[in-house]
Image 1 (cartoon, one colour):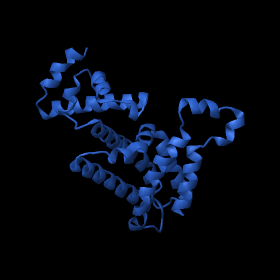
Image 2 (cartoon, rainbow, N blue to C red; image 1 turned 135 degrees about the vertical axis):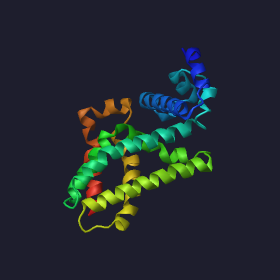
Image 3 (cartoon, one colour; image 1 turned 180 degrees about the vertical axis):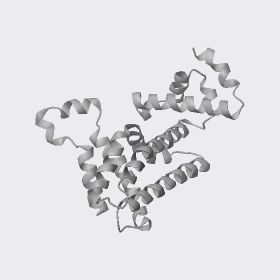
Image 4 (cartoon, rainbow, N blue to C red; image 1 turned 30 degrees about the vertical axis):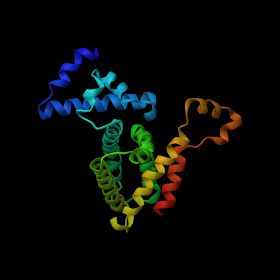
Amino acid sequence: MAQSKLPSFQRARQPKQIEQRREAILEAALVLFQQKGLKNVTLVDIAEKVGTATSNIYRYFDSREHIYLSVLQRQGSEWEKRAMPALDALKRKGTAAKVAEVLARSFIQSVEYSTLITAANTVLEKELSPELVIDFRSGFFERRKRLAQALAAALPGTRVEEIFPLTLHIFTHVAGLWPFCHPSSESEKLLKDPAHAHLNINFEIEMKQFLLRFLK
């Protein structure tokens, strides 16, 4: 199967074709990240999933980390498609409680983004090209600006300049809280025991409480 698809990757020369190849790689990587977890996915895995040689992946991405950051950016855009309309519906009439509920729910509905964002910091600590790091951080900076604008519009009496610094803590809190609330399958089995029920952590409850205090 890999050999049959290899020539199509080699012949990609036009911008549209190149974009199609990139999309195929990103889609395959996302599926593998969901199935195996980021740390367990290699470039070889991604190449096999797409149906090409590992060397061809380098025609479109610098590394596995480059692929991860591209997938994360794309899933961040999908998260925005859920969060922004819900915040827009609260324009000039939102409360801290309503906004907290909307944001917590948006992250729950965006499982891929919430899961992938937990690894962002460790990936950025790896040896990536300066251009790639700046590109990712710039995209994240713009996402934070859009969120700050939406929050300021939803919460009467607030200003974008006041809220923008807080947006960083919203994303980093998701990155830290999500793994605690979504443990491995082995840990999950243990926590289903009634004797350990008090050790379970509910993401929606904890995230809403954090945001409520934060936004107030």
